Amino acid sequence: MDKLVSILDSFEPGWKGKSYLGRFIEILREKVIPTYSVMESRIENGRASFPNGWNEIVSALNEAQVFNHFLPVEYGGKKRSETEIYCLMELLGFASPGLGVIFVSHGRAIDIVLQGNEQQKEEYLPKMAQGAFGAIAMTEDKAGSDPGAIGLMATKADDHYLFKGQKVFISNSGLAHIYAVLVNTKGVKGPRSLSVFIVENDTQGFSIKDLPEKDGLKILPTGRLIFEDSPVPLKNLIGSDGMGLLITLDAIDRGRIHIAGICCGLAYRILEEISNYVHRRRQFDRPLTSSQDISFQLADMYANMNAARGLCFYALKQHSTPQYRMSSSQAKLFATRMVMDVASRAQVLMGGKGYLKNDLINR
Image (cartoon, rainbow, N blue to C red; front, side, top):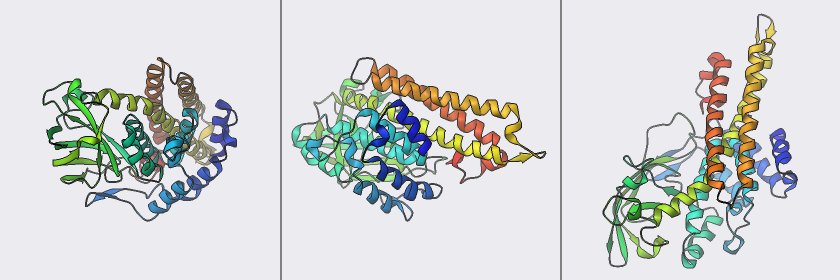
């Protein structure tokens, strides 16, 4: 991890001297990386359940004020720059990509709450600064890439809305206390029919079901949200009625670069693992690295990883400009393809070992 910190510091000079970084790295080394292969979540009785060790990780992260990195000072946070948060995401990708995605989802919920009124921000943001996780709920069985097809209905009744329907593949299901939920408030299909509300985890008629076991990111609780005439107060509407899709997509734009960072961090971890393996592994009394083909593959993987990181830092320079959406999208596209290529090649190079369940590449 020290080498990765130095690489990131070369892109953002002075970053490795930040006062909060030492404790963060210590938590990743002592509590996250050792439990990576066994930390698997389940949703039981509507709440996310983890093996022993999870509470210690969250407590340590909270004590180190990691939750505060995403929030403005006026709401109990210590907001870091987008570049600093990106660097933290690379480290999370190196240590535990699933934990990284947990924080990406948490950060997007914060972005949505920040679009609310002062009362909403004062009610929810201090809780999120103190360790209450957030989640963003868009996807449905028939509404993935087409959010205009969202079918979760919200019917107005006096001072609240009644939610009826389901969401699926929602990150942080059962872990979050605060959900930013995109719903249809007009009764007709279309983007201008969508609004976003804050829904608390103890809302009446709101339940969470687990999904079948995933092949990867097993620490990330991913489930189905079920609303059965669940009353959500009108005061929990973020922004104005019919503006929910714009608000939500803006939050998602901010998360692309963080996902790209997680991919770069994970790729670096895989490269470390596979480089050590091919140097140790001997065939016909020679290390695998004596094969020019294998050395060329490692060089390709390393070059593509650095190209992805370069796109990420280029995009970060465009933050707060009209070019950011395109540049961050390009960075995420390249980084996600890159890490899949790195993992696929590494799995082949490791032979049978690459197919073992608890191997890094398969988690």
